Each structure stands twice: as C-alpha cells, then as structure tokens.
Length: 286
Image (cartoon, rainbow, N blue to C red):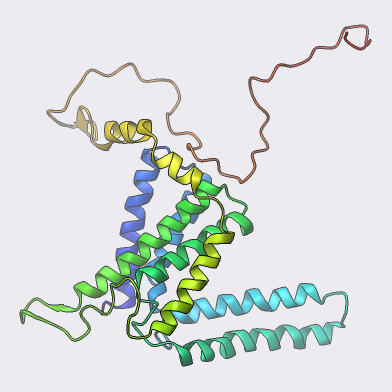
C-alpha cells in the first residue's frame, strides 16, 4: 500500500494535469479552478478513511465535528445562555468527532467497501451537492468538482494496486485485488447500504446535464486539440514540424471565464437586451 505522502503527491500531479486541460479548453474560469483541483487532491486520500488513525480519517471526522457543532450552536443561539452554548458546542463536537468515528470504524474494515468504485461515485455525488447547494456553484461546475473527486479517488485505488505487485520478487502480494473493485463482495450488506446511500445522493444532486453538454461539444474538443501542442515552437525557442499558418493574434486572451458559468444563477443582465429610451420631456413613452 502506498503511503500518505505518495497518495498526496500523485493525486496533486493528476489533479494538476486535469486542471491544466480544463483551463486550456476554457471550460472553467479561475473562480472555481482551485476548488475543483482541491477536490481531486482530497479524493486521492479519501479511500483511507476506513484506516483507523490515518490522516484522512482524522481530517474528515474533525471537519464533520466542527461543522456539526457550529450548526448546533447557530440553531440554539437564541435559546440558551453563553455557558450553555459552550457546553452544547463542545459536547456535539466531541460526540461527532469521537462517537461517530468510533461507530464508523466498528462497522467498517480497511480495504472494504470504501476501497471501491461505488464509494468513489458516492463521494463524487456528495461533492457535487456541496459545490452546488453550499458553495452556490453552477450545476456543471458542481459535477466537474465531483469528476475531479472521482478521478482522485480512482488514482488512489490504482496506486494501491500497483504497490500490491512485488516487481523485484515477481509475485503478487496478498493485498492484490482488494483496492480496485466495483464493490466489496466480501461484505454484501455494507455494499448494499452504500449503494442505497449513493442512489439517494444522486437523486438530490444537481442535474449533470450541463456538465455532459459542455464535454460533448465538438467545438470544445476541436479547440483542445488545437491547443494541445505548440503549432510552431516550444516556449518560442525550439522549432517543431507542426508549424501551420495561424491568424493574427487577437488583442484579448481566448481564456476568459470558461464555458461553464461560475455561479448557480447568473446575475449579469443580457448584453444584447434593448434599452428603452424615455422622452426628454419625462413623459411616458407610447
């Protein structure tokens, strides 16, 4: 099994490469590119949440505990004194951080259902929900974040399988085949519960239609192909044999805000909408 530093390093490289493609294809503007990239990096360590005392599980349950405790605080801010709110806040933090994690580790096993493609789909759907309903991002951006999460998740599973092969000894370790799987057939009850939770998440998740429409556009792939390699020189120095006649460069950059809107609801008025002119006398127009 690859260690935490290796998962983070490889996940960062994969997410950075995907982010570069996203920027080059003008799919997403700079407002959200960092967020979706971090989702990919987070996905590269999420499968290890079922490993007790791992950094991934510690960060996850600490974050859930802080979020839940502040929800309790805000919901009861007008009902109790400050001293009582301190007790509620601290109690809910400890209950979720340690109680929930203890229950989770009691019913889960390492390299069980969380080391599966089904779990990756679960986290992708949850990421899309958080991006859209919490961060207020457009449906396409939300599912792009979910896609980055899924790719980071799959990167972790593949890396674990690679480390399950002893290349020097020309043998397969006992852990081979336990990391990359569709679901955990050893514990069908856990897999069924996760499958039901995943379906419920996808039912309340934002529509993936804008995401698929953006990535199925022929113009997107044509533009990406044109920008994939330099047409004349690498970094303006090393000549290539791919030189072709290019139109004169425009004054402004082609990459602006991305083909996917950043916010869930655009507040920018239509630019081409006609403007009604009032008469100089102040009388209403006919």
